[in-house]
Image (cartoon, rainbow, N blue to C red; front, side, top):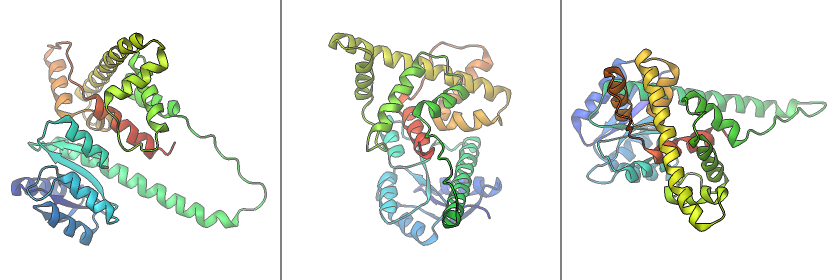
Length: 299
């Protein structure tokens, strides 16, 4: 059964373009479109789509406010945010509200198809796991004899290392910092909200150093190591994409953990042999996405 979509965007041409991409690519069916947040809430609650494409900035209420209103009313749809905004704090807030991915305007057909295929895969996997869980619960009362062995709970390290390995970052010194940050974040009660990066760096630095002056120096070193690690990961994925645009690692990790514009820019640099050594990365987005990945993995 094809997935159903709703599109909420105050730009009519954007709505039409997204609908054509979804339907022409066989990604699913568009159940309806709306040009504002309030109209979108009514539409989505009525249609209960699997996936919602939501514009971030709209005249009546922004996309984040709209998503939170829907979630408060029991909406279980998956959300993809769309906007041309470059403010990283706003993008971070969007991820904290529960969106799956962020697509930037102007709309790029390849990016939209890549992102939505990944969302489709996630949705299908989530539904499959729910079905398995339901089946197991039904069988629970039929179990006799010795209780089955309970598998050991995965650690944060168990979950983070394969992600870093797939992005070519496992050998980077910043990988240790990423692991430490994830361990700290997964210990928090409110794992859906990412604290300021400076606060994270300070907490990690305090694990490494005792002296206040050493902690201050270590905080700067942590940020530098993270930037180098992420730059390595971005370059690794861009290289894979140049060789095979449909490679599973590129399709999954590139648009999920990095801004697609940065991925494309790095691919062009590599292709033209003009690597500058300077790579733009969004540390906050990377960490926020990884937290969501770990949460979905049910550590």
